[in-house]
Length: 451
Image 1 (cartoon, rainbow, N blue to C red):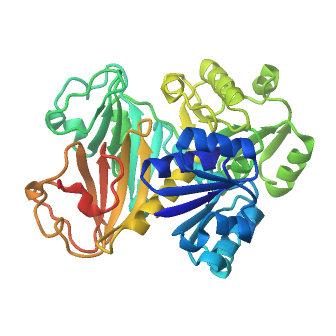
Image 2 (cartoon, helix red, strand yellow):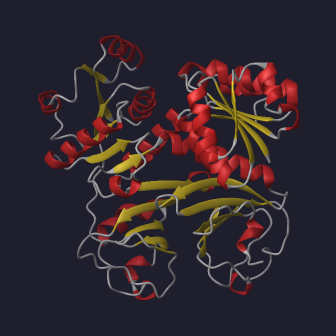
Image 3 (cartoon, rainbow, N blue to C red):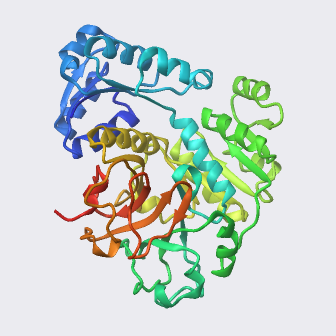
């Protein structure tokens, strides 16, 4: 497809890189000439220095022949106006990054009036991921499917766990879950089967029924406890969305923010939260505000390096659930080995949502993509497809399908009933199907079958 991306900051770069890798004809627009030179040198794509809200600039980028324009600058108004002009000039699909909480409350009206195909709010999406991690504190990562009915939960198998060194098919403790992905200590990835044997140091992703999650963790040697108090460092927009949601769940929230003006704003917006004006990089401030006794610690400052240092300190002196925001540092192989808890990356969350939409645009009516997650340092994809029509994958026992290697059908959602599939189960029209695979780039449910 021909795609135009307006804005080449952190999110724009990640998007352009991934869309380029997926074979799309890509043009990026940004006012910063240095960024455009970098785009040309690093990604070998067309780059135009200009204003994305300019009709002339969009025409130069080929808007009249484009399938999609994605506006991801740092300014909501520029993104919305860019999409409006693109809709009028090219009648293409449009996606806008909209971050302001005031706009988010009116987003349905904005989408309808401007003809937006999709809006994405990275801060709100990141906050919701953090909420899930607080609800299931033993998880390193949680990916949600089937409109919240299915959770793919990532965790590190503890030393001495009773699920180690036994074939999956022979382990009674795994009977209530489905093992979907295994990452070895050497970073190799396995899509498991019944003969897989878990080893010490493995990081795994499993699907477990919601009502059995805590019992499952307890049985395999992972301590669990409900979170009642959350300490947040950084009064960002993510912090606002997070605190607002946690307060509704009757969780005590404390936010440490350095700027006095932002503290006053948060105090007015979140009267039930405790807002502390102070510098969290000062160890004394953290100690005074109870970091040693908090149930969860979330570092959300604008500096990745500061977030990492704060989380390392929290890990050293407390037993809190730790969540760290990382948005610029790309050394996943280094960060993943640090004891900084669960990592949240807003730019990657944004890219996942947009890539999902782009792939859905390429689908036929047979199976539209509903959900897409990148896992295990982007080497695994978990996808959910809605089966719209009968095809080569429907009405045939799974054991008789010639499935691609390193691919697992994790679950089938049939009218709200979650099925953990066996070889005798079939996919029917109307089902939603969750797939986990190392074969990146699937666009359609039919793509699970070998050519």
